[in-house]
Image (tube, rainbow, N blue to C red; front, side, top):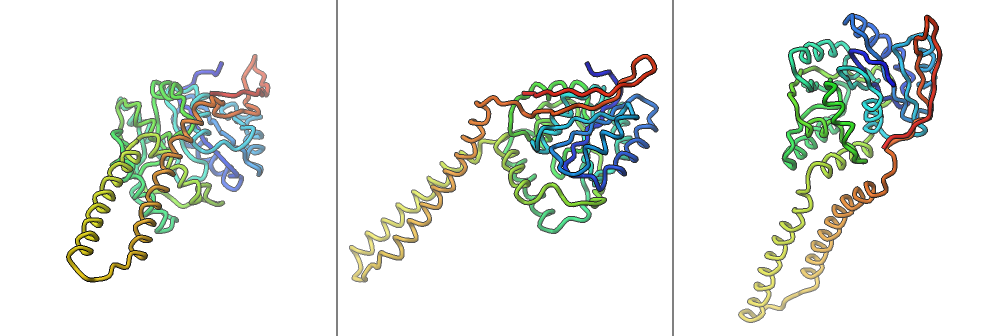
Length: 328
């Protein structure tokens, strides 16, 4: 059983060897200044570089460091989930390893938590080092998501946040496979507040969220918290049906009351393309929901852990432990 501590810091990582040393240094400095017990939970999401080995080396002599080493890449949101499963702190902080989110802000989160807030999330006021398209698409996604769901999911926020032990325990009860953690944290409720900050550029390395992964995360967020895209089929279908009926009446009236020759091929092709395109789009939306239902029914574990590395104090000696586990 994990030893209780005051703070648990979850750091998901995927091929982050270029920044791990600085991330470790800054986190140690920040958490050491609290004067409280803490643990640094590095979750290796199938890295193929030296990220896991570097954390393993730290864990050999630093008992605050724990490495949760996945058997393969399961995804960023699953890595965060694994960190919550293993976290033992009264307060749990989620922060990425790339240092775009400043570790020093954790102290402000702790101050808010000590005021009685159970969730403290960081809201970005500026995003440095990102393209205009990335900023625009992210802004659009959060606003579409907020308009599509009854859950109050804050805009311009990521996974960088502090959650209370009670919130962490409730999150562990949520079983869905295609996870959108920041949305789930909003869904469970409790007293929540924001602190604002300017997001920095990556210290080194490349983004682990290219367009393909961003699109998947967006779909996970929208389909997990809204069924309005399914209702869209009925609304658009009704509009197109009414439009088609009006167009049919105009064609009949033109044939009866005028001598003009109706050239039906272009108009017929246009209508077919519009309707067929709409049908394919709706089938795609239905497929997204059905695919997620299929994922849930398979009941596979969320992740599989190859090993857990940590140093445990035992009668003034230390030993390295490792185990294999999987979690639903």
